[in-house]
Image (cartoon, rainbow, N blue to C red; front, side, top):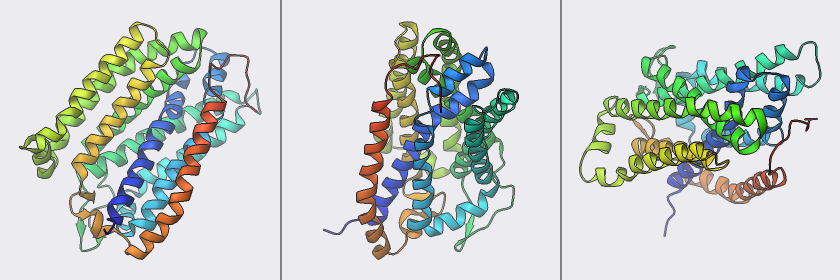
Length: 334
């Protein structure tokens, strides 16, 4: 039996992207909520909740981007010139945010400047990621094997809307993470943030879901034709169940349930996106197999990934296990 290596690698990269979104999403969400903290002690507690894991969460971004370059070079060559501006904005924002994360603990006089740098870097990174997603969903024009659009082709009402949607969604992840990891004033504020971000996230998921099929005839056929409708019908049903779980957890003051429900919303949205994209890696014309590197290269890289991926999962899981439990206001980051 011959392995479909391009399809396997598409699954690996999709998993890496999803892992990045749900793991780095909540610490970006904390940065988005940072300006709304009432005082320095609350901001310290918010940042301490992700201090042990925030940099490790970004491993998945490196894996996704590096994997795309190595495994689907044609897709990389098309996507980069089409999305240079938002991708550069993502990288610079993450760098600036990382520097702010470290430097704010080294100064008292200028700490407020680094607080704003952390908040603005997190917000811009989330917004640029949403724009990148929106530009991919709406489609990238390709002629031959090259990008055929303009410098500002990524900037459309749909991509701006997905940018806002991801900022709001990350804010929900950040709020529910704080509910799970903190206590006292920070947790009470996080409940308030979640009550605001939750309905907005659900509304924006609905807007994106209704808008997306009208961007591409294939999307419309995939979601609203028979028998494909049978395969996608569970997704909105499960989204509704996650929404109910989110509200139940917030009403009953459960610490973990709102966070798990928020993760469920992101995972289901990602599954819906993958269902819309397949078999394309760059809609509407570049398929997974057309963009893939030769099988010899894919096989060689898969051997290394079979060792690397379990190690990443093990050390990531171990770090979360070691730093489990609530983060008190008195703990500091060094």
